[in-house]
Image (tube, rainbow, N blue to C red; front, side, top):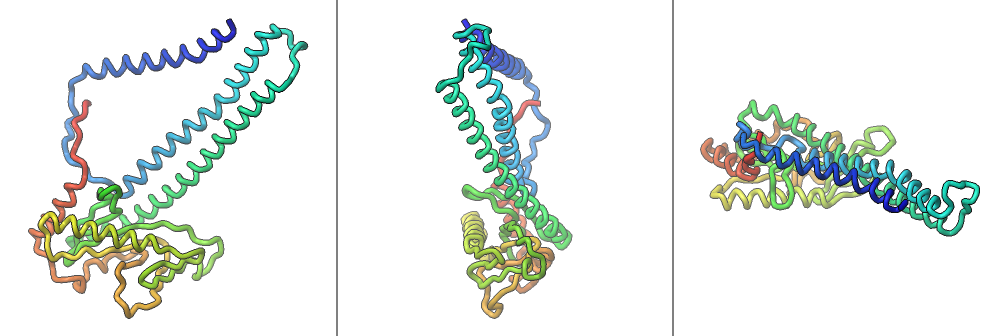
Length: 301
C-alpha cells in the first residue's frame, strides 16, 4: 500500500500538469488569428549567444530544481520503505547496508548535478563574455552607417554564424569577434597580444585557430557572393579582439587576416581596399546577405 501511495504522489501531479498543458494547446489551436508582423527580421548582435545563454539558463534551472527535489524524494522513499517494515515505531529502525545504498545513490546524484552545473556555469560565463565582446564591436561599427556602409550581424553561414558583415565602399568585411580574458596582473604587457600573420600570442598562451576561423568564414562569404553573381568584390577577413592592443611582429608583410581591437572601425572605409563598388552592386550584395536570414514565420497571435 505504501508503494501505491508513493507512486500516486509522484505520478498524479505530473499527469495533471501534462493534461492541463494538452488542454491549453487544444484551446490555443482554435484561435485562428495571425500575427500582423510579416517582416523578415535580421539578427541583432550576438543573437546566437543570446540563445545559447537562454538555453544554459534553462538547463541550470532544471538542474537546480532536480537538486531541490532529489533530497525530499530520496528521504520520502526511504521513509516509506522503513515504515512498511517497522510501522511508525522509530525505535525499531536499524541502519544497514540498504541505508548506505540509499545514501550513496543520493550522493552520486548530487555530485553529478553539481558537476553539470559547474560545467554550465563556465559555459555561460564564456557566452556572456562573447556577447559583451560582440556588442562592443557592433557599437563600434554603428557609425559606419553614417558613412554609407551597410552592417549586418550574426549572419547565418553553413553551420555557424558570421558575427558581423560590413558592406563598405570598396570591399566587404567579414568580422569575427573573439573574447579572451586578460591575466590577473595589471600593466600594458597584460593587455598586449602579438600577431605574426599566422597566430596570436597572448600573455597566457598562443591561438592559431581564431585566425584560421576568420579566414575560412571570409572565404565562404566570398564564394557565396560569387555564386550569387557578385564578381571582383573582395571579402576581407577581420578578427576583432575588443580590449586588447594588437602588435604585429612583421608589419611589412601583408597580413591574410586583419587583427585589431576594432575600437575605431573607420579604416574599413579607406580607399586602399579598392575602388568604390557601384551602389547597385552593393544593394545586391546586401540582398544576398539578407537571404541568409530565415523567413518570417507564420505564427498565431
